[in-house]
Image (cartoon, rainbow over all chains, first blue to last red; front, side, top):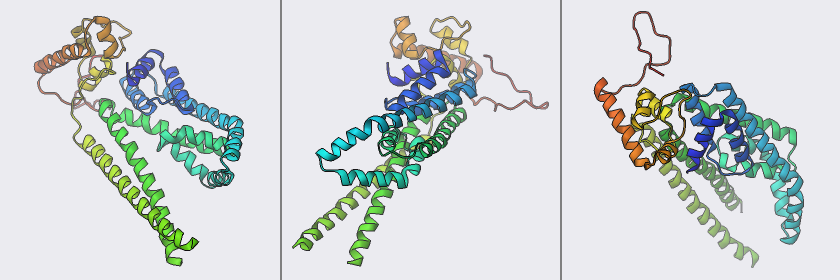
Length: 201
Length: 137
């Protein structure tokens, strides 16, 4: 049985608890189609199969708890591992750079990886932990991002409640668009920097 | 010597970045266009997929659920059967395609008896002047 069928079956049987569990596991790093699940939950709300608030609370608490578990794993276990890798491959400077980048752009990265580039979410959690990104700042950006994610997807599901398959396919394509735009932004920035350096030489 | 070594590698780096940029642009445009077309040309009726359950299919096709339960020989007693088509077909000893055919036939029959398909009324309170039929649950 494919994952979409398993998740919908679980949601139909166990309601909000299934949403909480699936999103918690997905936030830790298990590849589950949870954006689809939230859209489907929105559709179930419109159909009267499940209540709105339990869906919202289950989605948000599952996501926030899962993200913090990922952060904790990175903070407790990641630091030792990163130090070892750094020493073994002489990559201390690279790791220091990663930490600097995380402290400078971490908040934006955490916020957008919650709802726009969701596939990056579990990695951002781990990175935030092992670079010792401030826990309170992590929590604030995380909570804001997860509120946007759950609200947005559930509302899309409510709005297009009778067209789940179409919306699910379109959202899959849009994920690639967002990823593409992010890559264009990064490469464009690097290219401009590179040409500017050429110009000053 | 070091400077002369760095210049070609810098140029090469820029060319690689440009190629990556074009590739990212292509991917973005491809998926962006496809998402837009999918949305613009979305069918009124979605093809039935194995993860859909009968209450959802009834909602999507604007058909009373009991007709679909009848079509696959399941009782329409509360609580409604919310298993996906895949599970229902397996339990009934049918393939997903066979179960889908039964459902599609029931939908076609219902629509033939009611006239052309249409969207259900918006979920607002009916006004006094325009009586709106409430769908059966």
